Image 1 (cartoon, rainbow, N blue to C red):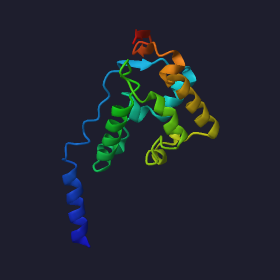
Image 2 (image 1 turned 120 degrees about the vertical axis):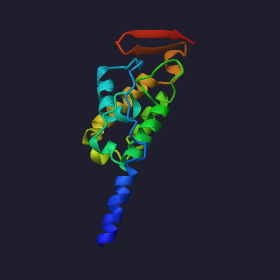
Image 3 (image 1 turned 30 degrees about the horizontal axis):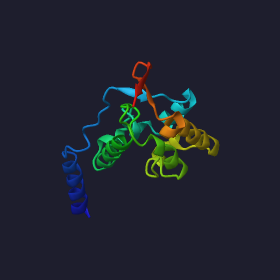
Amino acid sequence: MKKITIWAAGFFLLIQAVPYGHGRTNPEVAAEPQWNSEATRALFFRVCRDCHSYETVWPWYSAVAPISWLVTHDVEEGRSHFNVSDWGPDSEHGDDAAEQVEEGEMPLWIYRPLHPEARLSDRERQQLIDGLRATFGTEESDGGSHDHHRDHHGDHHEHQH
């Protein structure tokens, strides 16, 4: 038993040297979408911020391998699919956000136990879904001619397609 404990401790220390998972970053916010309301933005940032923005709160365990590998992967994956901190004309998947929440796919089940703030009441869940639909509706819902976003200073910008 003592050999197994020593081996496990050695292995644990060794994997801490793996560089993946140590590059936790929060780049500067470039632009945000034009939220339909401050309430939608607040709910989104409470529940979705860590994986879908550059305002990730990196908990202590995100620095400890192998958990750091999973956390880093999830944040990189989330940002690559949908990132409200780098919003612009080419941003995608906003219209899927409400559906993901409605179907229970977001936030990820593995995220919720350690993030009680991400647990929503039925009322909050519906408010978030409705707000996401209003904010990221399809192009048909706004005529398809403009894309609105807010830069990191909060100023609104409009782009013609």
